[in-house]
Image (cartoon, rainbow, N blue to C red; front, top):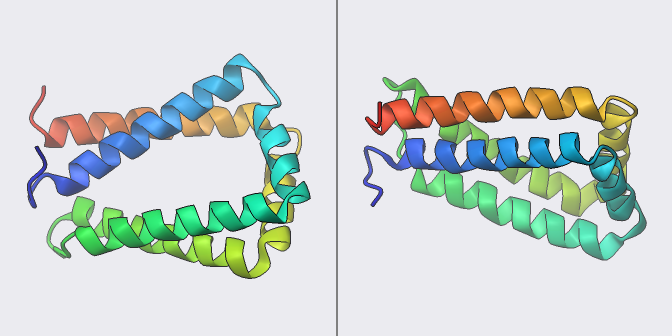
Amino acid sequence: MATAETLPAWIVLFLGVYAFAAAMGELRMPGTWKGMMHDLEQSPGMRYIAGIFTLALGATIYLVTPWRADDWLFVAVAVLGGLLTVEGILFLAAGERFVTLGKWMIASASEVWAGISAILGAGMIFVALSRLDTF
């Protein structure tokens, strides 16, 4: 069970598992992320749901993470929660423009982004497991 001392590590662990699994899905079936962006571009309702979900997730991460300036992981997780909150606000306020930016970033390099996501996910998993004293 998570405690105040281990909460950021648990958050990073699950975000790392998410990033790695999403990357494996894209690498296994290239074009999935492009299709997802196309769906978001075509559906205001999906953009709204994505915005609400991202805003709620970011706010929750931000609010439950204690601020400890002497520990980089606590700071990084709180900042990540704040950035997710801003992303949710952007989805709600200017979703079509935000999705256009996302499509431009992915363009024809979805495998590159998936590789970056896999590396970051694996790194987050490693950091979290080392913080949780599993090694």
